[in-house]
Image (tube, rainbow, N blue to C red; front, side, top):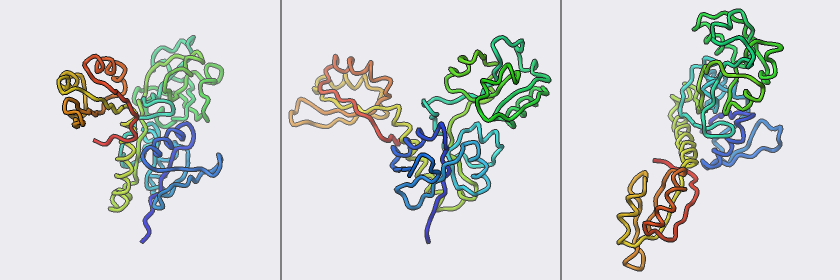
Length: 292
């Protein structure tokens, strides 16, 4: 019996980051052209389809796709009933979450959500915005926009609801954030029927484990060094390792080799401190996957 898992991958801003993490996870994707919607992969049990992340939750919920990569924002906007297998904390440029925000022009008299009563709002997140306004008892006209919402205020609409990673586009268009509606991260989601299928669930869990390992490795670094036994305690005291470091004997009985994994942001301060504590031959190296 042939097994096949149908995966929806986000086309657009998340595409390159998603392909990169899948490659680190061990899956080699290739596209025959920039316009192709069917990447090939070096795993015959996977079938891939590039599709807008806005649509992936609907197709996963209906079972047309078994699994998909999309944002929590689009799951919420669609109101999709799916299994959230894993949170994958990356966006198009960073490892940070995105925010879905309500923004108005800097010169606008609108200062609070209640001031939007009777106003016009442009957004890709129509359902999410309507539910948010209803929760505040505000009645406003919410119109769908095919992106580029920032250029519509104030000439065409009074406010916009958009996602932002850094806020730079909002500031560049002389807008200010009135409120954050939702903080969103990328999610690996599954159809409920696929999740109940033993083979598919096993395959899904394997992919999720490898993707999380690749993401965790982005924030970690490996360190190797040689240390005199007499300095070992002082060096170990400096290392905030996931576990105790690996210590291996060298041909010289007075020396050992030490290897450990630390957060990459700590390396800048650690290396000089380790050197002063007696470590020699320090080597920092990148990690492909870290699986606890």
